[in-house]
Length: 429
Image (cartoon, rainbow, N blue to C red; front, side, top):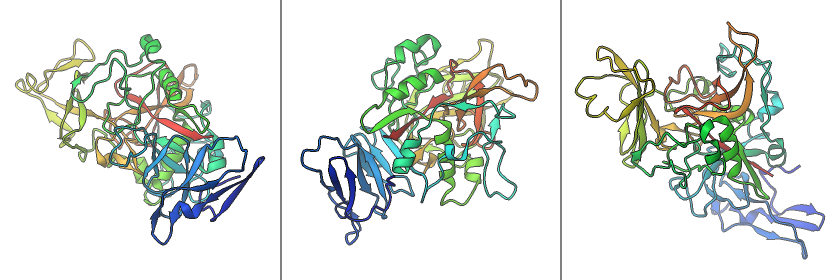
């Protein structure tokens, strides 16, 4: 029952073949106050088994399991310990490798949600602000929920799991991939009719990369599992247990429940005017007024949301708002009213969206999970329709109304929209 934290120096793991020694002194040198070259390990002579993880120190006295094929990229257990599948990647340069963040559970971390039992009443935060219970939309009760995801082995053996540092991005080999500014290709991303064309693709978890939205939950399940299947990790679409555990982790060290019940201060929501992009930022500016107005192009460059609603005129509709398509054919601009600007940004394009070294967990895209449930509303209690559950809110909605802890059950597994994306988790074997 190993816990990958605070190993004693010279720790020995006894196997059927003998003893495998892990010399922690070779990982973290307390006198130098930094990591050294790596681990010094002694494998029994004649042993034929393969390593699955390497213990790596975070520089603050904690040991984290880095799976075979991954490398330490920066951060600590408390701030977000980051790994990459490309050696040499760091916190600021993640264009080459996929990055993931360690979520510590158990002693020194948070309780893995399935240990609590997810089937409980979800309400908003308590009046005294001491804890949160998830905020929901459309549901009034959760007696019929179910979730086939999750993995307690990773938590029990290693004390945690990894979550994608970024929302899942469009694979570079896909026909609908856009490198920087260019066509916003809505076709082919993975709706029900196009499911066969994306089933074999692998998403990416990289910085400043177009988010893979317009995908169904069914396809998100499939492509998430395509990323990794090795002796050390398995990849999957994020589940409700992992999401709720991360939400609890966000609160630790912050001391404020409001960070999860109102994520408008750090999520890319339409009511957050603090979001700004650097010169290489990728974004697509959608809008809403009497119907959705979808961008047909990605733009690249610095951008900042300065206000949440704007006036449109007959002049600027011909210039900066000319390359759009309406969600409904009859919708048109009403120049007497304001409109809201719903800007989708690339994964991790804004530093303001980062918490615990994880980007865009709140806002930007609703994110599919493996959770499903019956649709109960005040008007309809028969529970005849099953819906896949989205989490985290999106840039199309306010963070005050749909924060990071929100559950949104309004779409089936074969529906998709411009605001629906996903995120991958890794469970260590």
